[in-house]
Length: 87
Image 1 (tube, rainbow, N blue to C red):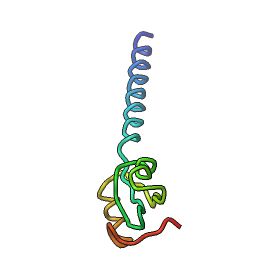
Image 2 (cartoon, one colour; image 1 turned 90 degrees about the vertical axis):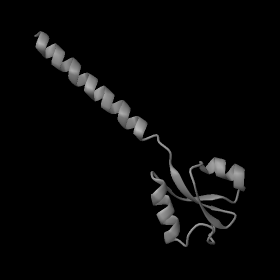
Image 3 (cartoon, rainbow, N blue to C red; image 1 turned 180 degrees about the vertical axis):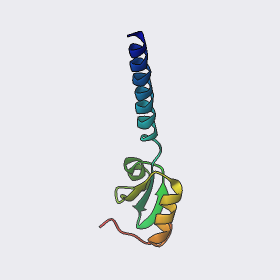
């Protein structure tokens, strides 16, 4: 009986640690491609932060988990500083 309780506690601990690790990884930095002042920009700021810095005409085009993915996407739509529109 003691072995069963020990096994259950070990399994519960492993599941708990895995759950916390997974949720922490999911809350990491996001890298976004924005249209700000009619130009493509890549930044790690939130949309609200970008609107504060660049003005209300800023919009989110697409969001990524990795900076390189955001850079690659920006290149695929013309590159940083290329023309864009929030409409």
